[in-house]
Image (cartoon, rainbow, N blue to C red):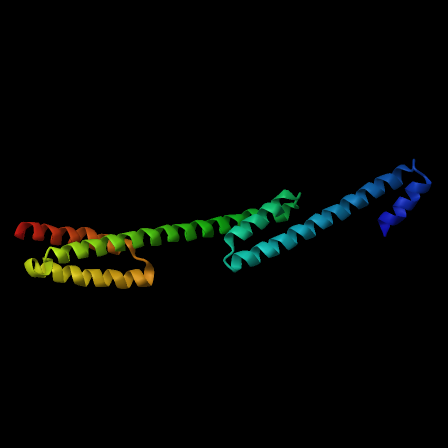
Length: 171
């Protein structure tokens, strides 16, 4: 409303300095309010994406929010939310890599078990074989529950080599 009134005055009197100044200030205020509302809306959408596990989408939305000349209060919120989203994304990636490593270790352990069975390890190294089977079962349960790559790798390192060595000694 004020902008329309000031525009009408400036149209009638183009040299009216106070009307020109008032018009510029009113337009700047409207633009600042639009940016504030847009930043608020983008932050709300980014938070919702983060809450739903959409870390990448959250970061994309925050990138858009950062590109608008956001008000000072929104800049801090954008930075803070970006840090949370980046940390969550990094944690998810680390968990994915750990799961991948655990699956690889589990496959290696299964291959070592097949080799030990072929070498008759249960017969020639019964105690070690029994211990390896118990540890292997424990590791498989932990893997199913937590993706425990460390446990599987430990079983593979500790017992796989012991069983293989015992088979070599007997053979």
